[in-house]
Image 1 (cartoon, helix red, strand yellow):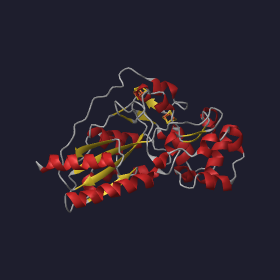
Image 2 (spheres, protein in one colour):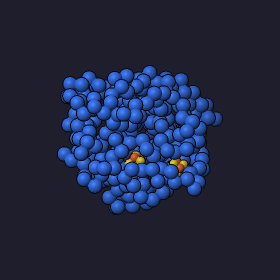
Image 3 (cartoon, helix red, strand yellow):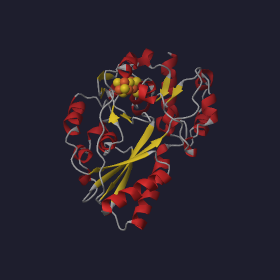
Image 4 (cartoon, protein in one colour):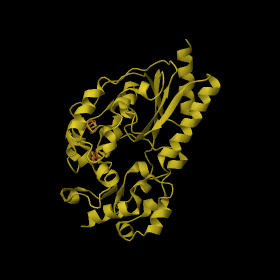
Length: 307
Ligand code: SF4
Ligand code: SF4
């Protein structure tokens, strides 16, 4: 019966730390995902994200990441902002309005892991935030935190999809939660709205066509010409397939102080972006995930739209 008690303890601490939902699944080989991932890579849907081909086995099997792994604890942290950018602005994905989520979530995971050590005992494990070898959406789905929609995002039936996903992989037996059903039904809004037609078939996003990839992951000096008139004013990431999803209609604003939008960022107009200096970039994105593109990358994205 300890399994149930420990699971409850972990979940209630996770909620105290501000996580929106916490679900648990049994660690083991991700059988259903293996052929899908293999096909996706074979079709070069990862573009120049070569790192996605690494650690193929580890991605599918957490016991290769943590000795004797027994459970995967998946956690969701809301980032849906109360306020959004003005219409007269180039667009930054909502997840990047505040402080870099990696640091914010890592701090919370460390506290949760420390709590487990204190309350339950010596438990081995590792924490993951958006890190390559863990298929976070697949684990969250297995843990009953939502279904993976046709836009390939995890969708929670009450919250939509504007949240981060993190995991703790533990060598501790816990009470697992079951998956829920897919509620996409006959909807195709995300497929119809995607500016670059990156959702090539339901549930399959061609990463190499996705604006998130083009504006963040692609490090080339230029974004391929075929996309220049399809960028839809996005300069860092893209939220279109989430914005149009009916399950996000009732998304509630987060209460995480670190994710509070940077006022200066929300006030930026297109003219301000066009005049962005390296100094302002550094100041504006000092603690932000946008730093990933570096100044040169963001300027490349802005110039792509202006062309
Ligand atoms: S993030 Fe944007 S470009 Fe990528 S699949 Fe969604 S709508 Fe298409
Ligand atoms: S927009 Fe429609 S099809 Fe796309 S993920 Fe949302 S519910 Fe599913």
